[in-house]
Image (cartoon, rainbow, N blue to C red; front, top):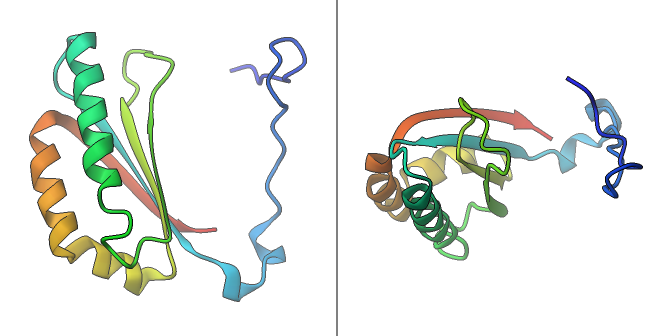
Length: 127
């Protein structure tokens, strides 16, 4: 897989992040990334469902106190096998992520969007 340098397509070149060990321990947060694959094969329906998923997840901002940052993004490539939607969220620590998982509003949102998915994958790590 070729890397994009940015020169030919006008995009900024990618730069590596500093090694984690250079970041003071007190500034690390837990990053929670969840990718979702929508079950409906129709591009029109996927677009509608992606917007619904994004609005539901973004409704948690300011409601769930453990959320430090939250972004919802859509796949722009549309390569078969790719996930369609991703959630990227930051938490102060593992305990904050654990509280988020059981927060009533998160549980409600999860229940409202779960039927739309044929697949889900998640990873949690320190940044």
